[in-house]
Image (tube, rainbow, N blue to C red; front, side, top):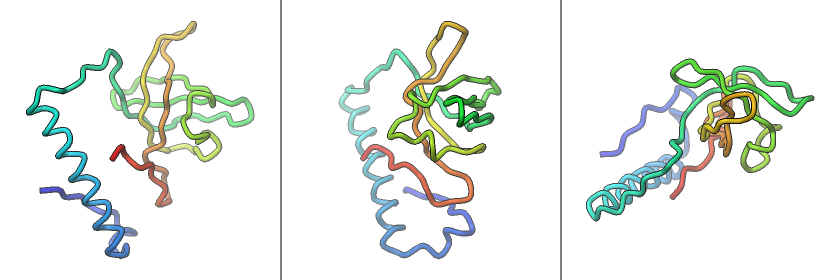
Length: 126
């Protein structure tokens, strides 16, 4: 069963969008299950993490993320996918890969997954 708890403002989304999202989620889960059953689960040397934008310095082209475990991670505008840096604001939810930079941990392949106060979300892999 695929379920989601919509936010209040999403309670009145058109049915076609709700169904499309539900089928995308179901398709992703089925692909993962199929891969697991076949033993085709990839192991990634880097683990994708989730965070929110905590500090943003658009004029300088960088910012800091706050991870679920409270760690602060630096990111540069060039590490944000799909030219998404200019769409970011404090509180934007992201997924990223953590790497060690010259001055400590930094984020790479930063992908916006949720933008506060709007319906903008990035499409997950289908």
